[in-house]
Length: 186
Image 1 (tube, rainbow, N blue to C red):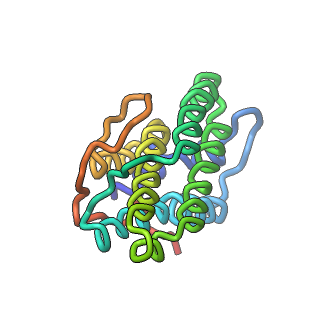
Image 2 (image 1 turned 90 degrees about the vertical axis):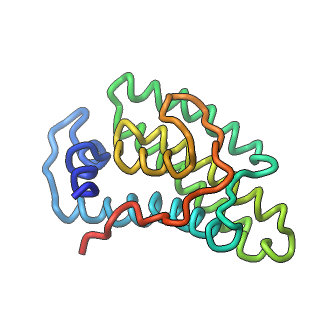
């Protein structure tokens, strides 16, 4: 029930498909598509693949030696830009920008191949997973106004707050019982 409440009441998708500047019609098919592609396929996948990898291969460790400088810079810009969009009531634009960062995170994960570097270059692997965890922690804060329940869950797993500012991953170990954030709608 929490996931459905998250999507319908406090979720992002009324904003993603909602009228900001004109009327719109609700489409069940579009709702399903948004849920399955953005919430499940992009955000949920990024969180799950990163944290499940840390649980399975890094003994639940997510704290990097160094977070990628480009990711830190991107997060700083995101807080400013997304905050301005929310203040102007441009929720759809804010969500688009956040989900662009989610897609970037998935691409970063793929490009850095932690499944390969865990044997060849363990430090690079830890830094990749740690940089992804840092990105996830901050995206959870950025998504909190739209997805409060799942954002709180991610923040708890990573030991970060929900205050609108850059978050460093605060736990050395994440819980072993990481769950799927959103159910797929058939």
